[in-house]
Every structure is written in C-alpha cells, then in structure tokens.
Length: 220
Length: 252
View 1 (tube, rainbow over the protein chains, first blue to last red):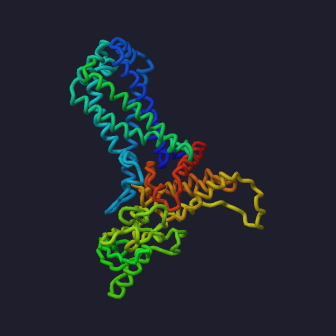
View 2: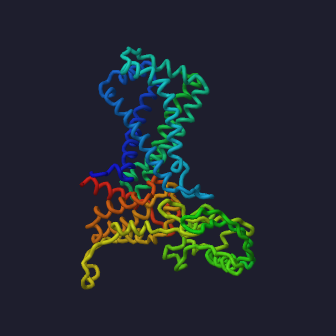
View 3: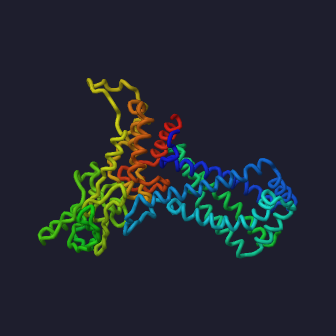
C-alpha cells in the first residue's frame, strides 16, 4: 500500500471510487424525488424517512466527504495535468479523436458544482440541515411545498434542467471512465461500459428533468 | 495520379536550441507533387533554404517506413497529421489542398523538451523503459520453441501491445500530456506472457513511478491517444496497467 495515493494512478483511483459512490447516491436521490410526482403524501413519508433514519444521518457527512474528496482530487489532478504541457499548441484538432465530455470533465464539474451550491441552499439547507444541524423540527410536507414553489418558476426550472444535462455529459464519461481506471475493463467491456454509462446517465437526467417539467406544466 | 503541383504556405516552429525562445516562421513552397511524402516536402524546403544560405528546419526522421517511431510533428493540430494510423513519414501531400497553410509544431510536453526547431528529446521514454520495461533472463542456449505454452488470444494481444514504436504521439495528443498508452503497451505486452508475468508487479510499480517523476500528466480516459496512435494500440491496455499497478500496490 506504500505511497499508493501519491501515484498518478492512485489519485485517479480516488476519483473513481468517490465518483462511483456519488453515482449510487444519485440513484437514491432520484428515486426519492420521483415519489414527489407520484403522491404528495408518499413524498412526505419519504422526506420524514430521509430526515429521521439513522443510516441516512450517518451517510450525510459521508456523502459530503465523498463530494469533497472528488472535488479536491479533481483540482489536484487537473493542476498537475496542466503542468505537463507548459507550451500549448497553436492549433489542436482533437474533436474527432475524443468526446467533448471527456475533454471537459473539469469544466462540467464546475458547472455541476456551481448549481449544486444553489440547490443545497434551496432545498437541503431548508430541510435536512435545519433538522440535523440546527435541531429544528421540520414538517414532512415542507419538501413538497419547496419543490412546487421553486419549479413553478420557469427560469429556475429551466436552469435546473440545464444543470441536469451538464451532469448527463459528466456522467456519460465519468461512469465508464471509473471502471477503466479501476482496471475492470477489456476489449469487450469497453463498449459495454460506455453503453451502460449512457443508459445510466440518461435515466438519471430524464428522471430529474421530468420533475420540474411536471410542476411547471401545472399538473401538480 | 495527379501531376498538378501544390503551392503551400508552411507555418513552422523555429527554435535555435533548448534554451532559446521559439517562434513560428512562414515559408512558401511551390510545385509540390501530391504523391510526395510529407517529409520529402520538408526535404525540398530544406534544400531551398540551404541554397538560400539559411538554416534548414530540423526535424526527426529515420526509417521512413513507419516502423522506427522517430518522425514526430504536430501537423494542423494532429499528431502525424491529417490521416489515421500512420506516422508522419507515411503521410502524403495528397492529403492537403493547393493554397493551404500547414502549421507544423513539435510535440508539446514538459517531459519532451524541444532541442531544436521541430526536434524534441523523447529520452523520457527510454528512462521509463530502463525502469522496468524488460524481462530479466540469464543468457544461455537458445530455448526450444513452444516449450512454454501460450494461449493464442494472449499472444495476439501481447503482440498488439508490442507494436508500439515509442513515437510519443500518445503524449503529444493527450490533453494531459499523459504517457499512459506508451507505458501500458510496454507493461501489457510483457504481463500477458508467462516470461514477463514473473516481474509484472515490480515492473508496473517501477515504470509508473518513473512516468510520474518525469512530469507526464494523468490519464483521463479521453481515448485521443488510441485514435492518434500509428499502431492503433487500444486503451484497454491502460486498464490492464491500472489493474497490474493497483494489485501490485495493494499487495505491498
């Protein structure tokens, strides 16, 4: 194990593991959110579960740590990679050779992170944070009230959807890339992982897009 | 075969030596046969420069048949120019249009410093190989063929990786200046064979450590390297290197 994390591959292993952890989290987040468009009452139950369940309470700081590690190592690796080419090319035409997402993971990450701050302020701060950190009791209906109030604003709903599709690009590359870095890949699996990545990213993005559209359309 | 000569404008990186600051200079060249190779076109340019009493453009080349890995050049934004699965010596002028401006740059990497004009030193690759890209054997008599059975698919994959000519196009193309395709090809070709497997763990650790030390970037799996590799080496070899390295490290 000596110096594993000081090596370039070790640092990328951290990116992969933390990325895969966040990928699992996104599925959980999506499944809870989708409850909101199925039934208001069921969503209140889901919100109460997320607020009071002991496992979730343990996982909140772990999740925050997962985000922090993913972001910190992204910065460390990106800075090191910048140094590897001190003089830039006058002309580069790499568009054909690689996907746009793969070349712009850091920028996509910044977009995702930027809106994440806003997202946390709008929802998490007013819900889980108030209970877990401030010790206040939160009515289980709060979640649904917040969602419907925000998503009925067209500008917010559109920004949210743009954010989710930036995440789609990030996930399309990040998902299969994680398995490549861990070493779980070969000639057969590379196309399979890339296909699974697209399916996963699309499920997540479509799922998260349906919710603001549902509220915006006035169905709620 | 077209006999209409091409008139071209060449924007070439000129740099006196490793310490000097370089700059682009523009040259005009006339009546180049579309059937000549890119390096022949540069030979013609240099011939003209020498006749005019000017310094010829320094560029790397050796075998001129795509197997030595010496020729480099980043042409119009692509390693080895606008064609697939070739080295620069295999690039033909028919890939360019009459009147076109061609921008020619050296490989850009902190680990491949420019020595002169378009020539970079790829000594970093040699250092990585010296760190572990070999099989230690006691010399003796020639062993009989097929004494050690090797499965055909493994032998094939090993040979695919061994096709690497160490040209450095992977590093030049990678947006991170990563040498992972090169290192993985060397590690993979040996790790797949029983003779190479024995030193597999030590090799992966030593070569990756050297690669990191020399200032190459980290792989972010963009796949640009395999697209520009003249020998079409797959990034699945990088997955094998990751596997070899991580398993070796976890055992320590």
